[in-house]
Length: 237
Image 1: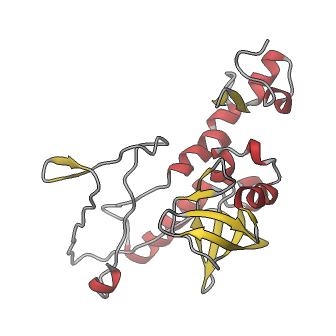
Image 2: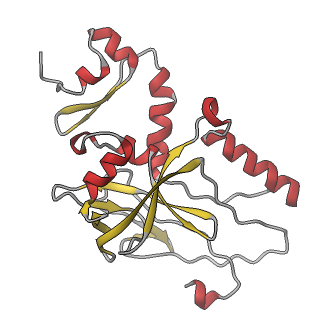
Image 3: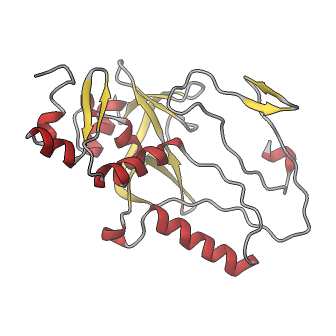
C-alpha cells in the first residue's frame, strides 16, 4: 500500500475485540464488516506530524528467529530452541508462568537504522511456539526490551507521551485533532503497574484455573507470599 501511495504518509492499526481474538469488525458505509479494511484519505492545508512513541529500552540480549511461519506470525524456534523457552529465559521466568503481563512489559524489538520497532507477543502455545501480533520472519534479529519506569530512568509510559506532545506543539502548535492507535498490551501494562499494584483492594488474575498475578494487598489479606499464591488456584483451601 505504501509503495502505491508514494509520498502520502500512512498511519493506522488493526481492529480488535480486546483479548478475545475471535471476531473483529470495522465499520464502513453504516455497516460492520469482517475480513475487511477501511482506507480513509485525508487532505489538509494545516501543518501535521505523524509520530510514534514508546517507553521501552532495548537490552543487549540479541536473539535470532531460526524457524517461523511468517503468514501465521508464529515463531517456532529462537536460536535453535523452542521459542517460548528462549523468551522465558530472557524475561527470567519458567515457560509455564508466562502471562500477558510479561508480553506487555517485556516485548521484543527490531532495530532498523537506529529506530526500534516493537514485535509484541500475543501468546505462548502448547507446542512451545510464540504467536506475535506483528510481522515476523526467519533470520530476524530480535532484542529483548524493558519498560522504562519513572523511578528508574525518568521516562515512563505517560511521561514519554507527554514529552512527545510537547515536541509536536513546539513544531506545529497545539494540535486541533489527534488520530491515534494503541496496543492492547498497553492496557494490560498500565493495569498491572498502576491502579492494580497500588489498589487497597485485593486483586488477582486467574488463567486456566490458576492465579497468575496477585497484588500485594491480596497477599496480605490471605497471609501468603505472591509466589505462593501463584502456586494455587481459586478452589484450593
